[in-house]
Image 1 (cartoon, protein in one colour):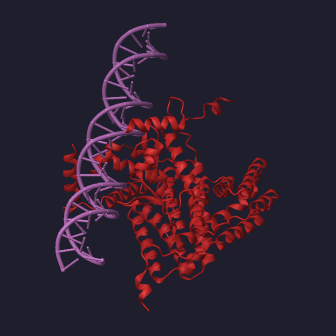
Image 2 (cartoon, helix red, strand yellow; image 1 turned 60 degrees about the vertical axis):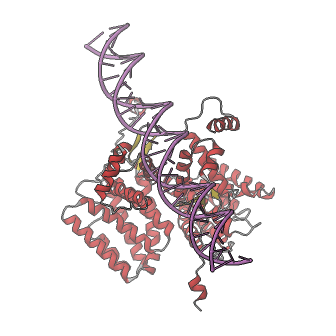
Image 3 (tube, helix red, strand yellow; image 1 turned 135 degrees about the vertical axis):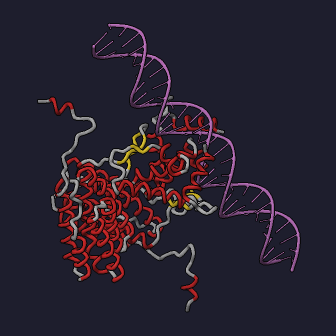
Length: 243
Length: 243
DNA sequence: GGCCGGCGATATGTATACAATGATCGCGCA
DNA sequence: TGCGCGATCATTGTATACATATCGCCGGCC
């Protein structure tokens, strides 16, 4: 069986003889799964069986488990004790927490971003915004969603605080999950040229404007959600039948 | 060998027949190591060998690896590819990032905390502050350090945002590491009754006062550090001999 | 006498084998 | 015919065995 896996691996990836450090391979797999979740190719609730993943990526369950644990700590997947892994289905409370956190951190970062942003940064951000609009226009939702998350994460990076940038990146990933559950189809999170407007304020060096705009932007995304508390698992029978 | 381990485990923990879920055991071990690091019983740079830990806690390396990976993601330990795990030694940059992040988040949380705090919360916080002062007085530095971190984490909890509370908790843990590296011995991070004063502002429901006080408090801690960039590993020979 | 290179020990990375547990399906009985 | 119960199966949790890379040491060589 494992021979077949090895063959499949070499065949699929077409890696030239020497297999990459192994740690890099893990990193790569992590990104693969992570992207699939963020791009909604794996919907919340989808089960992630260790065997299946191990076979797909051509490594043993050991490595997969490591990656799943990491994803669980990033709250992209949920690890239920003897039931295995599945893509996290954020609750309404979590959604609120995530957007409140984004309000605080992303908005708080804007003044510093406006102070430190370089021409190079601006160029890159404009490019990302452009590609996002193009993806939206041509109906590539998956790509648009990821670009939108990337945009916010990249923005946070500019402030120069690695810890906060990391936190924002994680919040954006989770936001993507939240959109998958509570978002309205056809109505993507970020309005089409919000990001361009934001870049404008930053290019003008106006941190406060950027901050206020980001705040409205995030509020708009949050407001566009239909948070209806699906009450899927463990419906509260007590509450339902109490009156 | 494994028989001996099993015996040792049962003998040591005195667990009654049924061994706890296993997941709980892992949680417990994680906390043990985590506490040891936060309390400076394990100093930054200390190596954490998998075999040794496996033997101490009576589980196999598999479980230990899982825990070490989690600690690495929390940035309490550093996992060097083929060199194993060691307690993280924060750089000066990281220290700055952590305290900047705490400024933003902990201060930002204060108004909400002041709004939501209950009598029960106040009682608990006062108790923690009291125990912290007692520990300080009786020279139990380890305990005092942990209680201080716990205090800040507990405070963040009150705002009701689990995501942000989690983030603060992690920042506090890392702060403890930073104190271990850059702190002056005998001069602990938090001044002895800063925490009591803070409680006072919160009890009075004055969120803005609390916020300003927290800001000063954190700045004071940061200012008390001697950040001297040890330049321990990889001394920059180019820079040293360039002139 | 000092330095380079090989060698052995040690520790980590990976895979696999085994055990335990929860889910599913089928059967028997009411 | 519907329900409860039991067996089987699928899947995860854990330990161990093996492969591999790194570090320190020692001998030979310059």
